[in-house]
Length: 253
Image (cartoon, rainbow, N blue to C red):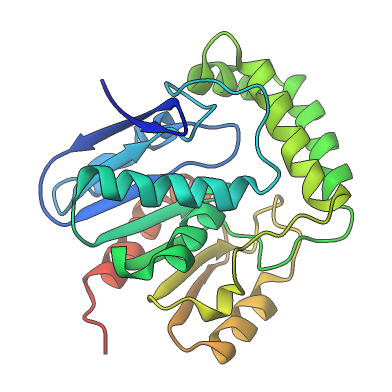
């Protein structure tokens, strides 16, 4: 297993195949394991790089997550790219990983070709976000399938990881923590947003949000699916992979 050092802790990563590097970024309470069943849709056409963000999966544990969690995770991506010296990479982030991907590109755009933000809930968090997270996580803990997913991704200490992550997300609203290190409309690399109208975990009006973002920055494009759960990249795996690969392969104008 491969690790790089991040602020005195070990962060796990894995490289698969060859070609242009593409880093897949898991969501909150998950790990890189979540991509296991969809990687065959991508791995013949790119070098896949997986990461378990600090405190998740096979990476070292933390006593608490930082308030600016998604900004910190974006910095972990930047540090991984520097460690690998892999040249420009593409980023595919899903759910919370989408926020991390955007933050990485905002921090050092010269390290990245393109960014995909899958199952992304917009540039602002909806009112009542914290209470919604608490309710959703409590329901998940009582659901056998969700508990199984947590344990599969995190191991025996899954409940501690989930509780720490819940605390960090609640703090976004409670402490008015910033989501991005700069307005996401200022992103300097092409960004594709993929969302589903059926995704019950997205609280914002993403059709309106996507239009607004595209008008603010034409390099931000979007694909809205009528059906598909959360995360879309897994729920509609083949269709989403087709859209994502076409976006990554398209020459920038």
